[in-house]
Image 1 (cartoon, helix red, strand yellow):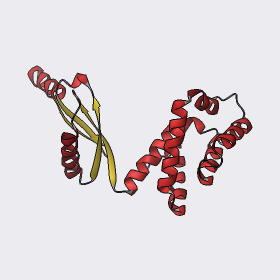
Image 2: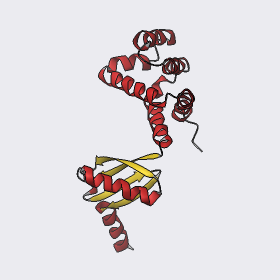
Image 3: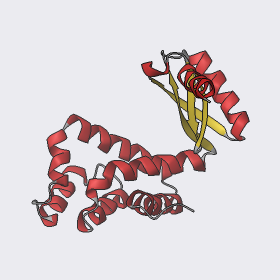
Length: 178
C-alpha cells in the first residue's frame, strides 16, 4: 500500500483524473512543460512557493500564465495545490505522477550507479538483466559515483543489486576482522 504522503495523495489523484479523461500523456507533457518553465524561471517558481504571497495572488498568476496553455484539469489541480498550501510539493507530486505513468505502461524506473559513465548498449543489457532478476520491465538511469571504485549498484522497484568493488572491499574487511 502506498503511504499517504502529499506526493502520493495528490499525484495519485491527478493521475486518476487524467486516466478517467484519457489525458495521461497530455497532462504528463504539460507537467514537463511547466517544470521547464520553472527551471528556466526560478523566480516564477519561487513566487508560487513563498508563503507570504496570498493564495489569491498565486491563483491569479497561475491563471494569467497557464490558462489556455494547459488543460483545464491541470490548471484546476494547480489551483487546488495553491488553495491547500501544497504547491511547495510540486516536484514530488510530479515525480510520483511520472512514476504512475511508468507503472501504467508496465515499466519500472531504476538507477544504476557506476564509477564511470555506462554506454547505451551496456545500459540496455543491464536493463534486460535487472528486469529478468525482478520479473519486470526496467528502464535505468545511469549516475556516476566515483566512490564505488568499480562495479555497479542498481536500485529498482525497491530492491538493491550491489556488485560494487566498494561493497566487496567492505565485506572483505568485515571477514578479516571476524
